[in-house]
Length: 269
Image (cartoon, rainbow, N blue to C red; front, side, top):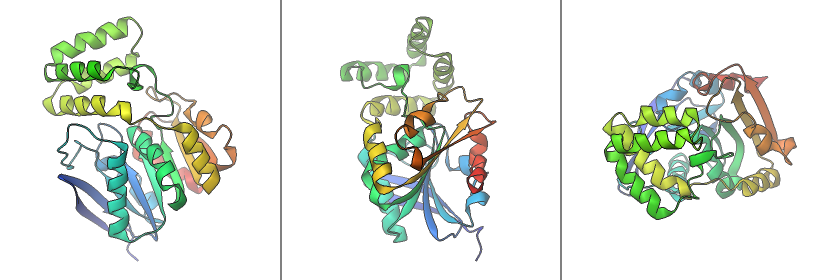
């Protein structure tokens, strides 16, 4: 069997076009989501490590890479719909999930929905377990989110707002640097706008996630980078609390990108 198989598939989801890169020909199905600001190419270093076991579908997020997204927002149900399309296309009854950073948040929102069909979940520096400062978003009134989203079109309006929050320690230095980087181009500003509007309704129900993992005995592996400046180092401990039998935490000598997922080689140890 040629485990180096690679294909590109675009799935129609309503008016959207979801770009997927399919890698390997392993017997098990793995659906993977990159993080915010990344594309399917993020996982390139990891794919050779997965090919013998998995057929991996890597999905470009809304407004990322080659995915064409028509709506101004996205929901948890949209990600459910995308996963269902892949399951229909592959004919698989059971599958595995992989997510990095925001992709980890996306995976966590899907665990309670697909729990009975999941074998393993891999989380790389997952977002959503802890939501520092503005990352929670849900506490900000909808009208204010929509008002401030309009500022994204003219970054000179939004950057001073971010600086103001940073000075008052309501925004971390990492988040402020993130804001500076992602407001430089029109494409990045559109990503920020949509994710800002969507994130309030894209929160992880952690108790439900834990109950699902325990009830369905889903093996869950969390990778944490010692040099990660974005995701708090204790997210793995928080997720594992009370369900330690099913959650394995792996600490690596890497930063937030976890070397493009190449740390997945440690799951064999």
